[in-house]
Each structure stands twice: as structure tokens, then as C-alpha cells.
Image (cartoon, rainbow, N blue to C red; front, top):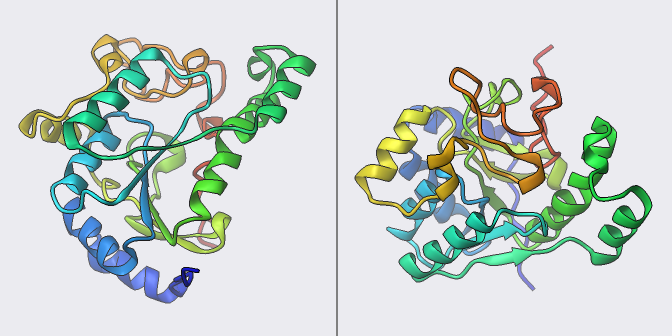
Length: 246
């Protein structure tokens, strides 16, 4: 049985300060040194995630890459997953929702209950995404995300390294936290990284098919996610806001 590795809040805070001005590659190198092999990248195969996969594949092809297959993804998502898998010669671990819970939700509330209220939407996200994420993270000591501070009002305070209190105090790395959208795409183009086809159709942020649309010129990059809700509500529960300083 693997020994669970945890860092103290003070150690994580010190690391976050140390790496705030460092590159994403340096953050990843530190994470791999500290936690390999029990570290993994959670990927929905958007632009940020494929850039991180490319960075990881350049150093450590055996790192865990996992995804949450909600059962309602776009076909283009599966296509880019397969392209990435073949291009880098890596394995991708899929985690699925509990079928009995999905079955009960759809039989009891229909197929679009998530559009009726924030509570219903969070219920669906909880079943299809949050619970499977918990199973994935139970196998790890640290996880990596593609969160950026400029993605949404809910993500403005994202540190590069943090304690994930929602998941038993494990360490969470956000190597692209201080990157702009332009920096992400400059990296993708410079390194010829395979990317999601829907990005070329006006989708800067991609989730489940019924909950994602293309955005209009001038709209926020996450305006196409759960577009019927207020911007400050647009999180599914995978990434909880850090506490505000008192």
C-alpha cells in the first residue's frame, strides 16, 4: 500500500511564494519531484490542459493523465482525446459517474434538469463530475489543473500551488495560473500541440455538450459555460474558491 504524502499549509504556502514567478515547467518539475508517481493531471482537453500534457510528456510520459467522462461530452472531445493519446503515446484514465445515480436522476427529473435551477445543475455536476473526481484523487497525493486567474471571476485568486482542503488536504498545482489566454495559444502553436476542434468554432471553454456553447465577440471566455447562470455561480464543484482573507 502506498504511503499518503501530505505537506503542511506552511510548506505549501512557502512553495507557492517560491514558484509564483517561475514558469509552468518549473512548477511541474517540482510537483513531479515531490509526488511522483502519485500525481496526476485532470484534463477536460481544453487548450490549457493540452498545453500541460505537452509539457509533461516532454519530461515524464508515465505521469497519470485522467479525465471525467460524464456521458454527455461532445464528440470532438473524444476525438481530441484519441489524437492526444496517439500523438504522445500516453495512457488516459477515464472515470465514469455511478450509473445508478445517473439513471435515478434522469428518470426522476428528466434529461435537462440542470437548466431549471442552480441547485439542479450542481446536483448533476455532483453526480457526473465531483464524485468521479473524488475517486480519481483517492489514488493520488497531488493533482494538476489548467486553472488560470483570468478565466473567470471565480478564479481570480488561484495560486500556483495550494492545499486542496476539499480533498483531504492534498496538494493542488495550477501551473498556468498567471498565464493569459494568448500565452496558452502561443505555446500550443509553437509546439504544434493537438487541440480541441471546437476552439476553432468559438468555444474557448468546453465542458458537457448541453452546458457549453460558442461565445460572441466581446464575451467573457467562460460565458459559454452554463450561460443561463450568473458569472459568480459558474463552478461545478471541482474547484472550490479559496477562502477570502479576513
